Length: 305
Image 1 (tube, rainbow, N blue to C red):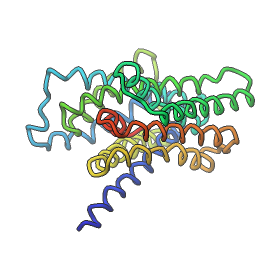
Image 2 (cartoon, one colour):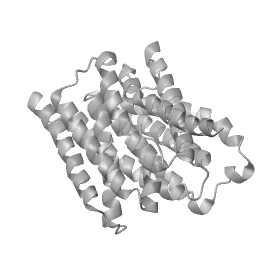
Image 3 (cartoon, helix red, strand yellow):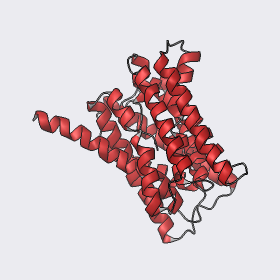
Image 4 (cartoon, helix red, strand yellow):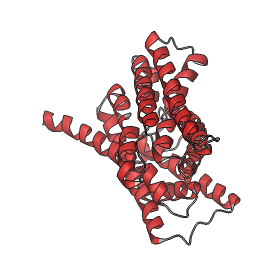
Protein backbone atom coordinates (compact mmCIF):
# COMPACT_ATOMS: atom_id res chain seq x y z
CA UNK A 1 0.00 0.00 0.00
CA UNK A 2 2.84 2.37 0.84
CA UNK A 3 4.57 1.61 -2.47
CA UNK A 4 1.33 2.31 -4.31
CA UNK A 5 0.80 5.58 -2.42
CA UNK A 6 4.25 6.75 -3.53
CA UNK A 7 3.98 5.42 -7.07
CA UNK A 8 0.74 7.16 -8.07
CA UNK A 9 1.86 10.75 -7.30
CA UNK A 10 5.10 10.28 -9.23
CA UNK A 11 3.18 8.69 -12.09
CA UNK A 12 0.82 11.67 -12.08
CA UNK A 13 3.75 14.09 -12.06
CA UNK A 14 5.36 12.32 -15.01
CA UNK A 15 2.13 12.17 -17.01
CA UNK A 16 1.38 15.82 -16.23
CA UNK A 17 4.77 16.97 -17.45
CA UNK A 18 4.42 14.85 -20.59
CA UNK A 19 0.96 16.28 -21.28
CA UNK A 20 2.17 19.86 -20.85
CA UNK A 21 5.19 19.20 -23.06
CA UNK A 22 2.89 19.16 -26.10
CA UNK A 23 1.13 22.46 -25.31
CA UNK A 24 3.29 24.50 -27.68
CA UNK A 25 3.02 21.88 -30.42
CA UNK A 26 -0.78 21.88 -30.29
CA UNK A 27 -0.69 25.63 -30.90
CA UNK A 28 1.81 25.22 -33.75
CA UNK A 29 -0.30 22.47 -35.33
CA UNK A 30 -3.44 24.64 -35.24
CA UNK A 31 -2.87 25.79 -38.83
CA UNK A 32 -4.65 28.99 -39.76
CA UNK A 33 -5.75 29.78 -36.20
CA UNK A 34 -4.36 32.82 -34.36
CA UNK A 35 -2.72 32.01 -31.03
CA UNK A 36 -5.53 33.65 -29.07
CA UNK A 37 -8.07 31.39 -30.82
CA UNK A 38 -6.09 28.26 -29.93
CA UNK A 39 -5.91 29.46 -26.33
CA UNK A 40 -9.68 30.11 -26.29
CA UNK A 41 -10.56 26.61 -27.47
CA UNK A 42 -8.14 25.09 -24.97
CA UNK A 43 -9.94 26.90 -22.14
CA UNK A 44 -13.40 26.21 -23.56
CA UNK A 45 -12.79 22.47 -23.74
CA UNK A 46 -11.19 22.52 -20.30
CA UNK A 47 -14.16 24.39 -18.77
CA UNK A 48 -16.67 21.97 -20.31
CA UNK A 49 -14.78 18.95 -18.99
CA UNK A 50 -14.21 20.51 -15.54
CA UNK A 51 -17.89 21.45 -15.11
CA UNK A 52 -19.35 18.03 -14.15
CA UNK A 53 -16.45 17.39 -11.76
CA UNK A 54 -17.02 20.79 -10.15
CA UNK A 55 -20.77 20.12 -9.76
CA UNK A 56 -20.13 16.65 -8.31
CA UNK A 57 -18.21 18.14 -5.37
CA UNK A 58 -19.89 18.42 -1.96
CA UNK A 59 -21.73 21.74 -1.60
CA UNK A 60 -19.17 22.94 0.93
CA UNK A 61 -16.35 22.67 -1.61
CA UNK A 62 -18.45 24.21 -4.40
CA UNK A 63 -19.19 27.24 -2.26
CA UNK A 64 -17.85 30.52 -3.67
CA UNK A 65 -16.95 33.10 -1.04
CA UNK A 66 -17.94 36.48 -2.53
CA UNK A 67 -15.42 38.27 -0.34
CA UNK A 68 -12.59 36.61 -2.25
CA UNK A 69 -14.10 36.21 -5.71
CA UNK A 70 -11.86 39.01 -6.98
CA UNK A 71 -8.87 36.67 -6.68
CA UNK A 72 -9.97 34.09 -9.27
CA UNK A 73 -11.26 36.94 -11.44
CA UNK A 74 -7.81 38.55 -11.43
CA UNK A 75 -6.26 35.12 -11.92
CA UNK A 76 -8.50 34.52 -14.92
CA UNK A 77 -7.55 37.87 -16.44
CA UNK A 78 -3.83 37.27 -15.98
CA UNK A 79 -4.14 33.70 -17.26
CA UNK A 80 -6.06 34.85 -20.34
CA UNK A 81 -3.42 37.43 -21.25
CA UNK A 82 -0.64 34.96 -20.50
CA UNK A 83 -2.08 32.23 -22.74
CA UNK A 84 -3.04 34.63 -25.53
CA UNK A 85 0.39 36.29 -25.66
CA UNK A 86 2.28 33.00 -25.23
CA UNK A 87 0.23 31.18 -27.89
CA UNK A 88 0.71 34.13 -30.26
CA UNK A 89 4.47 34.06 -29.70
CA UNK A 90 4.62 30.48 -31.01
CA UNK A 91 3.55 31.74 -34.43
CA UNK A 92 6.55 34.09 -34.53
CA UNK A 93 9.36 32.11 -32.91
CA UNK A 94 10.53 28.58 -32.28
CA UNK A 95 8.41 26.30 -30.09
CA UNK A 96 11.41 25.71 -27.83
CA UNK A 97 12.08 29.44 -27.45
CA UNK A 98 8.48 30.24 -26.50
CA UNK A 99 8.38 27.46 -23.89
CA UNK A 100 11.75 28.28 -22.36
CA UNK A 101 11.21 32.06 -22.14
CA UNK A 102 7.76 31.55 -20.61
CA UNK A 103 9.48 29.58 -17.85
CA UNK A 104 11.08 32.81 -16.62
CA UNK A 105 7.91 33.29 -14.54
CA UNK A 106 9.44 31.95 -11.27
CA UNK A 107 12.08 34.65 -11.61
CA UNK A 108 9.48 37.46 -11.57
CA UNK A 109 7.66 35.79 -8.66
CA UNK A 110 10.88 35.81 -6.66
CA UNK A 111 11.56 39.47 -7.46
CA UNK A 112 8.08 40.44 -6.25
CA UNK A 113 8.73 38.48 -3.05
CA UNK A 114 11.97 40.42 -2.60
CA UNK A 115 10.71 43.91 -3.43
CA UNK A 116 7.16 43.90 -2.05
CA UNK A 117 7.13 41.09 0.53
CA UNK A 118 10.61 41.84 1.86
CA UNK A 119 11.65 38.20 1.80
CA UNK A 120 15.25 37.53 2.75
CA UNK A 121 16.91 35.89 -0.23
CA UNK A 122 20.15 33.95 0.02
CA UNK A 123 23.16 33.92 -2.27
CA UNK A 124 21.81 30.90 -4.15
CA UNK A 125 18.88 33.07 -5.29
CA UNK A 126 21.14 35.79 -6.68
CA UNK A 127 23.27 33.24 -8.53
CA UNK A 128 20.10 31.74 -9.99
CA UNK A 129 18.84 35.20 -10.95
CA UNK A 130 22.01 35.99 -12.87
CA UNK A 131 22.00 32.59 -14.59
CA UNK A 132 18.30 32.80 -15.55
CA UNK A 133 18.76 36.23 -17.10
CA UNK A 134 22.07 35.26 -18.66
CA UNK A 135 20.62 32.15 -20.28
CA UNK A 136 17.72 34.15 -21.70
CA UNK A 137 20.19 36.66 -23.14
CA UNK A 138 22.10 33.79 -24.81
CA UNK A 139 18.88 32.44 -26.37
CA UNK A 140 17.74 35.86 -27.55
CA UNK A 141 21.24 36.80 -28.70
CA UNK A 142 21.72 33.63 -30.73
CA UNK A 143 18.43 34.27 -32.50
CA UNK A 144 19.45 37.86 -33.21
CA UNK A 145 22.81 36.78 -34.65
CA UNK A 146 21.11 34.24 -36.90
CA UNK A 147 18.35 36.66 -37.88
CA UNK A 148 19.52 40.26 -37.21
CA UNK A 149 16.11 41.75 -36.58
CA UNK A 150 13.78 42.28 -33.65
CA UNK A 151 12.20 38.89 -32.90
CA UNK A 152 8.61 39.65 -31.97
CA UNK A 153 7.97 36.07 -30.89
CA UNK A 154 10.75 36.04 -28.31
CA UNK A 155 9.61 39.37 -26.86
CA UNK A 156 6.04 38.11 -26.65
CA UNK A 157 7.21 34.94 -24.89
CA UNK A 158 9.11 36.97 -22.28
CA UNK A 159 6.04 39.21 -21.82
CA UNK A 160 3.84 36.16 -21.29
CA UNK A 161 6.11 35.05 -18.44
CA UNK A 162 5.33 38.30 -16.60
CA UNK A 163 1.57 37.68 -16.83
CA UNK A 164 2.02 34.05 -15.82
CA UNK A 165 3.94 35.22 -12.75
CA UNK A 166 1.04 37.58 -11.92
CA UNK A 167 -1.33 34.62 -12.24
CA UNK A 168 0.81 32.53 -9.88
CA UNK A 169 0.99 35.31 -7.29
CA UNK A 170 -2.77 35.83 -7.42
CA UNK A 171 -3.51 32.13 -7.24
CA UNK A 172 -1.19 31.75 -4.27
CA UNK A 173 -3.68 33.86 -2.32
CA UNK A 174 -6.82 32.46 -3.95
CA UNK A 175 -6.04 28.84 -3.11
CA UNK A 176 -6.40 29.76 0.58
CA UNK A 177 -10.11 30.50 0.09
CA UNK A 178 -11.29 27.97 -2.54
CA UNK A 179 -10.94 24.26 -3.11
CA UNK A 180 -8.50 23.35 -5.86
CA UNK A 181 -11.14 22.13 -8.32
CA UNK A 182 -13.43 25.10 -7.65
CA UNK A 183 -10.60 27.57 -8.17
CA UNK A 184 -9.36 25.87 -11.35
CA UNK A 185 -12.88 25.73 -12.78
CA UNK A 186 -13.53 29.42 -12.07
CA UNK A 187 -10.16 30.44 -13.49
CA UNK A 188 -10.64 28.37 -16.64
CA UNK A 189 -14.17 29.66 -17.21
CA UNK A 190 -13.22 33.32 -16.71
CA UNK A 191 -10.18 32.86 -18.93
CA UNK A 192 -12.40 31.32 -21.62
CA UNK A 193 -14.88 34.22 -21.52
CA UNK A 194 -12.12 36.84 -21.68
CA UNK A 195 -10.38 35.10 -24.57
CA UNK A 196 -13.70 34.92 -26.41
CA UNK A 197 -14.06 38.70 -26.00
CA UNK A 198 -10.49 39.29 -27.12
CA UNK A 199 -10.97 37.23 -30.27
CA UNK A 200 -14.28 38.88 -31.12
CA UNK A 201 -12.78 42.34 -30.59
CA UNK A 202 -9.79 41.46 -32.76
CA UNK A 203 -12.01 40.01 -35.47
CA UNK A 204 -10.30 36.62 -35.26
CA UNK A 205 -12.20 33.78 -36.97
CA UNK A 206 -13.55 31.13 -34.62
CA UNK A 207 -14.51 28.62 -37.30
CA UNK A 208 -13.68 27.53 -40.82
CA UNK A 209 -10.41 25.82 -39.92
CA UNK A 210 -9.08 22.51 -41.29
CA UNK A 211 -9.98 19.31 -39.43
CA UNK A 212 -6.40 18.99 -38.21
CA UNK A 213 -6.70 22.38 -36.52
CA UNK A 214 -9.82 21.33 -34.64
CA UNK A 215 -8.00 18.17 -33.58
CA UNK A 216 -5.19 20.39 -32.28
CA UNK A 217 -7.74 22.41 -30.29
CA UNK A 218 -9.10 19.16 -28.85
CA UNK A 219 -5.61 17.95 -27.98
CA UNK A 220 -4.76 21.23 -26.26
CA UNK A 221 -7.96 21.15 -24.23
CA UNK A 222 -8.01 17.49 -23.23
CA UNK A 223 -4.30 16.74 -22.95
CA UNK A 224 -2.63 20.01 -21.92
CA UNK A 225 -5.44 21.64 -19.96
CA UNK A 226 -7.35 18.74 -18.41
CA UNK A 227 -4.80 15.92 -18.09
CA UNK A 228 -1.84 18.25 -17.54
CA UNK A 229 -3.46 20.46 -14.91
CA UNK A 230 -5.21 17.63 -13.07
CA UNK A 231 -2.15 15.38 -13.01
CA UNK A 232 0.10 18.10 -11.62
CA UNK A 233 -2.64 19.08 -9.17
CA UNK A 234 -2.83 15.48 -7.92
CA UNK A 235 0.95 15.31 -7.58
CA UNK A 236 0.98 18.54 -5.58
CA UNK A 237 -1.54 17.02 -3.19
CA UNK A 238 0.81 14.15 -2.36
CA UNK A 239 4.34 15.45 -3.03
CA UNK A 240 6.08 18.55 -1.63
CA UNK A 241 6.35 21.60 -3.89
CA UNK A 242 10.12 21.39 -3.45
CA UNK A 243 9.95 18.13 -5.44
CA UNK A 244 7.30 19.08 -8.00
CA UNK A 245 8.53 22.57 -8.89
CA UNK A 246 12.14 21.72 -9.86
CA UNK A 247 10.95 18.59 -11.68
CA UNK A 248 8.63 20.76 -13.81
CA UNK A 249 11.74 22.36 -15.29
CA UNK A 250 12.10 19.22 -17.41
CA UNK A 251 9.14 20.42 -19.50
CA UNK A 252 10.93 23.00 -21.70
CA UNK A 253 13.76 20.52 -22.23
CA UNK A 254 11.33 17.85 -23.41
CA UNK A 255 9.49 20.40 -25.57
CA UNK A 256 12.74 21.33 -27.29
CA UNK A 257 13.52 17.65 -27.90
CA UNK A 258 10.10 16.65 -29.27
CA UNK A 259 10.06 19.79 -31.45
CA UNK A 260 13.01 18.37 -33.40
CA UNK A 261 11.05 15.56 -35.11
CA UNK A 262 7.50 16.91 -34.68
CA UNK A 263 8.01 20.57 -35.58
CA UNK A 264 11.18 20.32 -37.65
CA UNK A 265 13.13 22.60 -35.31
CA UNK A 266 16.86 21.86 -34.95
CA UNK A 267 18.40 22.15 -31.50
CA UNK A 268 20.81 25.04 -32.07
CA UNK A 269 23.87 25.58 -29.82
CA UNK A 270 22.50 28.94 -28.61
CA UNK A 271 19.22 27.37 -27.56
CA UNK A 272 20.57 24.38 -25.66
CA UNK A 273 23.42 26.30 -24.02
CA UNK A 274 21.24 29.28 -23.04
CA UNK A 275 18.36 27.01 -22.12
CA UNK A 276 20.52 24.89 -19.84
CA UNK A 277 21.89 27.99 -18.11
CA UNK A 278 18.39 29.42 -17.59
CA UNK A 279 16.97 26.13 -16.29
CA UNK A 280 19.79 25.75 -13.78
CA UNK A 281 19.22 29.36 -12.71
CA UNK A 282 15.47 28.87 -12.23
CA UNK A 283 16.17 25.64 -10.34
CA UNK A 284 18.49 27.52 -7.97
CA UNK A 285 15.82 30.20 -7.47
CA UNK A 286 13.28 27.53 -6.54
CA UNK A 287 15.72 25.82 -4.20
CA UNK A 288 16.62 29.10 -2.49
CA UNK A 289 12.97 29.87 -1.72
CA UNK A 290 11.58 26.44 -0.90
CA UNK A 291 12.12 26.83 2.85
CA UNK A 292 9.66 29.74 3.25
CA UNK A 293 5.92 28.92 3.49
CA UNK A 294 4.83 31.62 1.04
CA UNK A 295 7.34 30.61 -1.58
CA UNK A 296 6.42 26.97 -1.31
CA UNK A 297 2.84 27.90 -2.08
CA UNK A 298 3.79 30.09 -5.02
CA UNK A 299 6.01 27.40 -6.51
CA UNK A 300 3.38 24.74 -6.49
CA UNK A 301 0.18 26.60 -7.28
CA UNK A 302 -0.42 25.42 -10.80
CA UNK A 303 1.42 23.76 -13.63
CA UNK A 304 2.88 25.73 -16.47
CA UNK A 305 1.66 25.58 -20.03
